[in-house]
Length: 211
Length: 264
Image (cartoon, chains in turn cyan, yellow):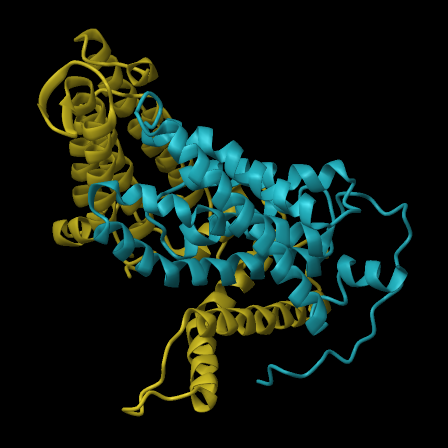
């Protein structure tokens, strides 16, 4: 299996605009599944370190976990930026959570689907507002901010953070983590993927050729 | 890691996967709105009996799978005990323990364990591919997402091997420590992760092409080993949800139940 070969197929020209917004190609569905599987696997590898980190920092270990929260948001902005279709982010997050629960046997159970849908909606909103046309640093940053911000209120309810002393501290840490790890890092990854040529056959590649 | 579908033959394992998933989801959401310690403790007990007797899962396996939940439950409990304002029970310098903190912390911890036991019962008695087939047939999930997810499952099984191969390829060129071992840096982890991502995206595109060239998406489809919802499945679903409703109602009648208002 060679990793460094470039694809030989040439990018197709932009398709007709009349194509239905919801008619996903199998290729696009498969990409979202692949993103879910790879990030599910990498998260699983990282979670080992995550648990060690929270044990090492004692009773306030769950505060240190917030620092890494943004990493859980990555799938949505990456999927949106590559596929550029409505609901790509929400569907990508839900599929990633299905893979975690169904195939990796994640401990959280099906409540993860709810959190995933909220995260995905938050992350996707800024891109949707630009009608999937602008993919600049501020849009990614806003995506991370909203992804972390929306799901915070759900997590706060689920874990009982409302009415505790550290409520605002938690919110601040999660928002910063969302912007950096869940927004800006996504742009770094997407741009790097585009440079390898591996996503040339998707909407992002067509947009580059069309530009 | 405990893989899905470990227990293949038990009353719980024979139930329809979609019905089980729906029951688990409804129970989890219902428990989200319970904030007293007694109700989730009762659900915990009932769930444990159901999973051990109905699912024929050994108690040791359940307890071992509960470990991550225990860690999380303990964290939730201590944070609430130490940081929730209220009637002070005990104070020493920075450390303050309140009645509200103890009650809410215990409720949240027990809820984590209750959902945990039910989720473990589901995961250990459900085969992943049966679940996807059942979601396709019984829950009307489209053929393309269903088969894409199953192909993703295959890809997932290959990932550890790919990960090891990339790691080995990078170690060959990596700078060595003085004792000859390879230095593992976060940057190396990032590079390996990116290589894995690129490799998998390419493989996914090939998978999509081969699925399409084999006629995926054409109608009508026939299914090998069809999975059906039997009357017994409906009885199972109704029984579990009725038990849940009975426990919550009993707790409410005894005045033990409290809702999300306890948080504020």
